[in-house]
Image 1 (tube, rainbow, N blue to C red):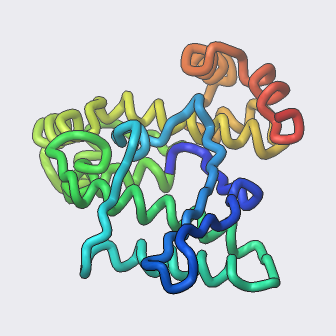
Image 2 (cartoon, rainbow, N blue to C red):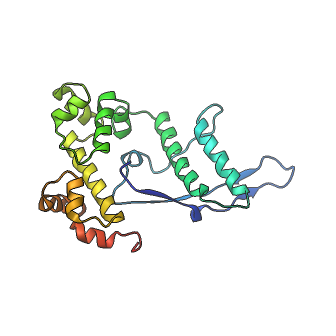
Length: 223
């Protein structure tokens, strides 16, 4: 949710088949590639190990299996549509979900989603990053006391509520700067800042460059 991810259909390699006819099981290898914003790793991806292995077991990961079947079907057809790129994105989502389900943790961003109070607060922050949120208002939204909320929130994502709010605001601001022509003043307002100066200062502290310079160097066309 926080990081930009885009599946590259061109990164999908051809099939490699081993074994002659009637000589045993057939192996099909599919290779996919994803372009991720390395300056803003999504928390769910950051919690993954360097290598993720999902063993094939009967009855497990049925959504993932369905996505692989659909991808295989698209690759076997002569008409290559935009479905391959979308299926690669779905495939990534199901792979990350399957791994986290197989390796549940008590802390971390994914663990936070399993806490009803923290989940409610995260939904509120993601839906309205520019709202004047406070720890008290987020606790009220999560229907728990301020002290309980602060403890549970900090204990799962690993960040305080307002620290996470700033992180998300800067993530959204970077997306607006990268993908729109909105004035920096408007981006600041949508990010919850009444002062363009305060926004620029917070943005530079987060990304190391001013908003205008970030926009110039991080446009998709420039990349």
